[in-house]
Image 1 (tube, rainbow, N blue to C red):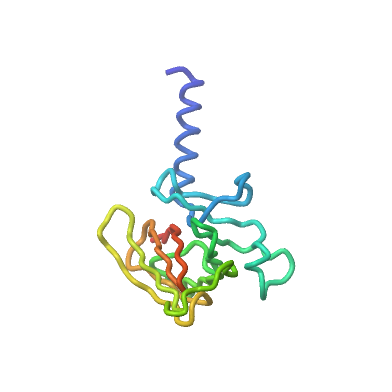
Image 2: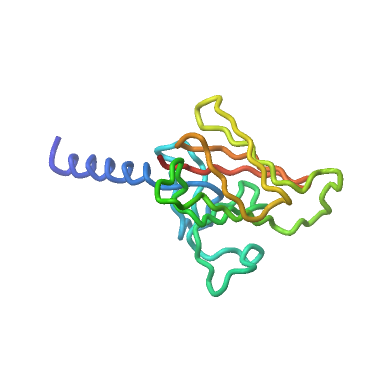
Length: 170
């Protein structure tokens, strides 16, 4: 293999290695600016955004509100990550704080549905499944997972549903 081929191969390895350390979850911005993804290495389809929060999700934040966040696949909910990257084991005493912000409903929610945000998380490539709840619906939470890896979250609240992937580092 010539020096050009080795350079291309080495560059590809560096790019792929970079993907393995990136946290993930949510939908992408149209141009991909301000986002990182772990899809190449982890199987996660979602992205961590670092650009401004949308107007419907920035209440309580000041200025440009550039915090890591992940959109649900439908765009009906955003997870604002105060701990980035999320970690399976936080040895530094911090926690996996996530603020869940739901987009204002365009239709009335089902009054028979509980307001609680129910998160059913499945570890990618396994049968490992856990359930977490945020009482009162979307809002502040500490969401820990039992293992590192890519977690597919099925989210249900007040008659609404969405999904997202979040990566928990070791």
